[in-house]
Image 1 (cartoon, rainbow, N blue to C red):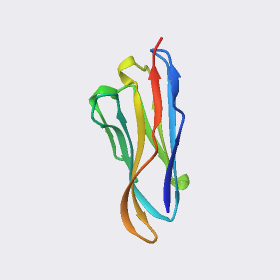
Image 2: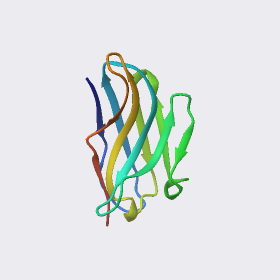
Image 3: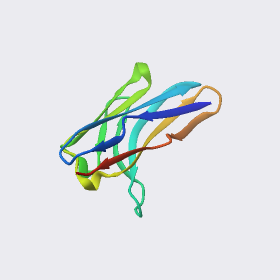
Image 4: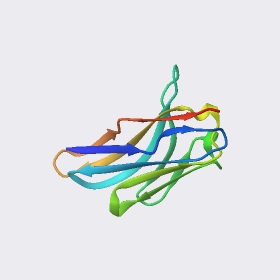
Amino acid sequence: QVQLVESGGGLVQPGGSLRLSCAASGSIFSIYVMGWYRQAPGKQRELVAAITNGGTLDYADSVKGRFAISRDNAKNTVYLQMNSLKPEDTAVYYCNADILTVVAGSKHFWGQGTQVTVSS
């Protein structure tokens, strides 16, 4: 069994900052890509940022220069530092990972989601 557990969401004013964390646990052999997606009401889920185990980064154009993704491979944890938040960043943020499990091979896993609300 593999689980992704997110934390760090909440309510913040425009211009503020939040830091999301996502820890993977369970029968993990290795993790290739870890990332964050978000889904706003009435919209499709979209990639926010991703990072490979080698450190290659990918960001949505809408968050470049404001968000920073990082990971701690020893802790199987990925972080998303979100600065200069805007109301349009409001969404449920989901952690995502491509994990090579000990028992079941390579699989794609999702966290349960954490709400980020940017409002004054």
